[in-house]
Length: 66
Image (cartoon, rainbow, N blue to C red; front, side, top):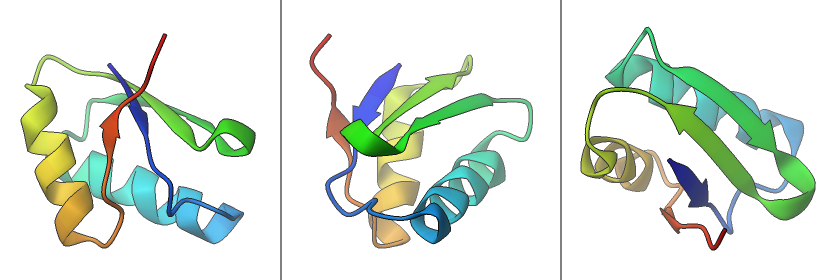
């Protein structure tokens, strides 16, 4: 699943986003694309679990195009 996170603007943000995703699913694969503010998550959990956790962490996410 690919998400767009407007508030992810620096390496620190990317580390926080990664940590939040790993808190939801420690086995998830996380790929950050900082220039496009996108994160690609490979997990068996539903996307809503990640968007909810990211929102609570201050990084509102929405499905990315493409």
